[in-house]
Length: 514
Ligand SMILES: [Zn+2]
Image (cartoon, rainbow, N blue to C red; front, side, top):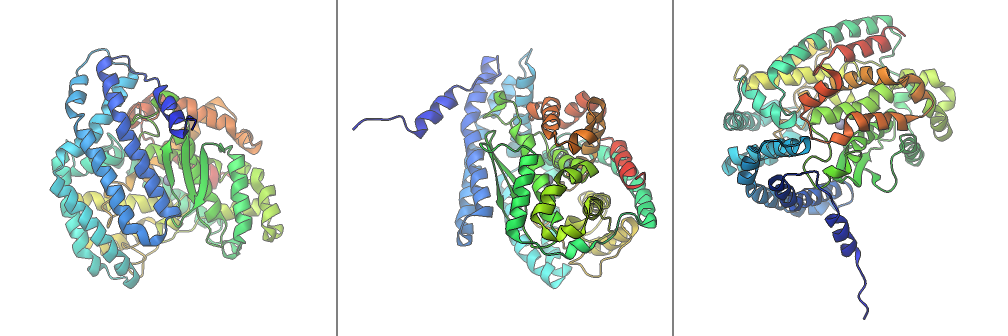
């Protein structure tokens, strides 16, 4: 029998041909030793993607076990790199790749070395049990059912903050896991003026009535097959690569990256209000573009992909809102929409533009529009910070939540299901995460301002030359992956960090000047 090179053989050839950017032998050795860890992460992502898309639902327990095991193997391998990383970090004359690699490794190793396994186990157990109870509590709109689990989670997260360490506020330690280097001082400085500017814009928009609070198209039902055609056409407009990208369906859309050459998104089809499906596709494509455009030299290292949740969200929001909800984009895709969604014959381009940009003060974050969304985030951030800082008790949250909702958005939940129980994050232990959504919007605004210095964005979008925008983003941000920290890359790009001014001026121009 003749032996033929198999698929594995091709893989090994490709694997061996990877040229590390590290010139220093000590760092190059760690980079090499990281490759199996990269593989575990890639496998873990694939297992997670499959669980949300095609896995028969009965296997979730075993799949959860398999994912946990790959994560455990990752942790064991990472721990072997603690000493080599500490030694390499003291070496002189490291290049940017080496510095970035060691920075990210230290940040990840911090988590494994500073947090006792018992704490991580307690957190995981509280999250699993708490999420089950949270689902039931939300159904019954009964915060008291969920309260003991949230109290336990807050206690564990305060312990986590103490173990990780911080300079100013204990919340800084938690925020840093999601947005490296960002502190409550940074966020307060940004969210306070943002909230007051947004409040001013919102009251003017509502008074003018040019952007509707509801639109008849929200109730119109669509054929799923027709909407699939629309979304596939949108992927073409965004020039998503056929060989290295795919789209599937899940209840909650997400992006999953297995490698630079395998990035997958999901979208959703609820059967009515087609903008939800359309903008899920655009949003997740924005995440995917960032991950797909890492420089090839970052492959198999922790630098491929993106640098932080805030920076990632800046890219998804940039495509979803700044581009996707612009007049030019609506004009560009209107013929596709009209050809596939027969009910649009009664609605012209301008109507569709108003529909996708309706402004409605509402209670539910995931349904919020571009303008009111940030209030939902600021509220959660304020509450989390006070909980972790010990200035607020869990029992006080529902009433404080409702008061803040009234203050910021002007609406008051009638029950806890519409209020404090609406999001999964707290039961899952994701405390410190929310702020990154608005930081993403803010950085998106900075990109929007910056790109217009280099090109006439509006006409480029209207002409469908989106490849030029993608190329620009690649050169400015994507190709660097996580090589520079979120603050450093912002300084390099904009000469400033987290400046909400550009988001505000964009919203003023869009909602008040036109
Ligand atoms: Zn996102």
